[in-house]
Amino acid sequence: MDYMKDNKEISAEEAVILWQASRLSLSKSYEKAPEILKVHGSVIGTLGNFSASIGKAKSKKTFNVSAIVAAALKNDTVLRYVAELPEDKRKILYVDTEQRPYHCLKVMKRILRMAGLPDDRDNEHLEFLALRKYTPEQRIRIVEQAIYNTPDIALVIIDGIRDMVYDINSPGESTRIISKLMQWTDDRQIHIHTILHQNKGDENARGHIGTELNNKAETVLLVEKDKSNGDISNVSAMYIRAMDFEPFAFRINDNALPELMEGYKPEAKKPGRPEEEKFDPYRYITEQQHRIALEAVFGLKKEYGYKELEDALIKSYTSIGVKLNHQKAVPLITMLRNKRMIVQENGRKYTFMPDFHY
Image (cartoon, rainbow, N blue to C red; front, side, top):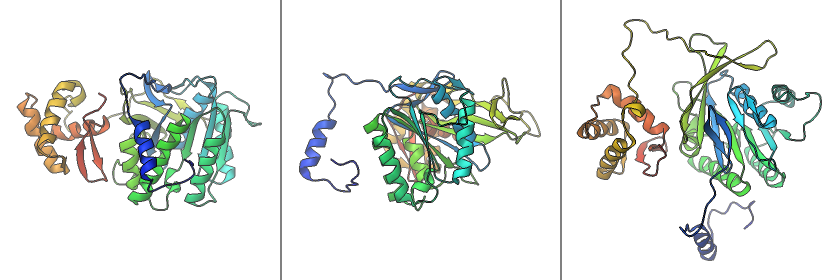
């Protein structure tokens, strides 16, 4: 079938072929996805999957992603990012949907400088597209052609995925572009990393497309200004399938490049009495306890609103010897979402994902 066609419906004959091709068998072997991006030994990017960076305005998201691209260009370490691209897949495609060519060129030069490469000539491993002047539909088509017609491509950055849709709150458009990311990464065995703004009022990625990204992405990195020093940005894993990594921080140095803050710990500036040790549901509750409690909760009902989920979890975990209250249920639900043990479909109801990776 032609990859350029967006078939909303397929024929019965095509469905039979796809059904047969999709059937798993224990008699066959399936390769593990090659790991190409890591932080502190934790895998954040594999070929055949996609990830995202989110953060509020001026949090330095593009600087952070520049470090990821520079690491991939060097096939080495930049900030805390370690890239291990296969020798036959070294091409990187950077797509910017927001900025004019002049500003895109500054980003391109920054990436080359961070990789220790000359910034006065093009690099054969990096292609940069400035797509600000096009419509969302045209952008999708241009990126698709570039992905399918670039030999040795490994990594694609989409800086401004919200500009690949007309309405970020449209379920149909959001599902379509996320399906595209899944199709492109699978067909071409590449990794795609996207950038999306956070809502101003909370920690969520913006719009319905943000919900879809959170549910489907391999990793979602959170880039945020340090609360006590606005010149410093912290990077942590908001969602991650692999083992979580220790958050790190960077600042922009005198050469306008991100620079790692070695040994930096964010300052806690909370008035009043010191807090007791923070409840860590990942550390204090075993995987087996989580599974038993969740299977009990979702055995009674397939989906829950937040408040009824909180009540059900408190009862269920307490019944297996884990004493919870409403204060502790909040970080528990956050952890369950971060590890995708539960997901919030369409920004509303929570459902259970029994095949979670702990």
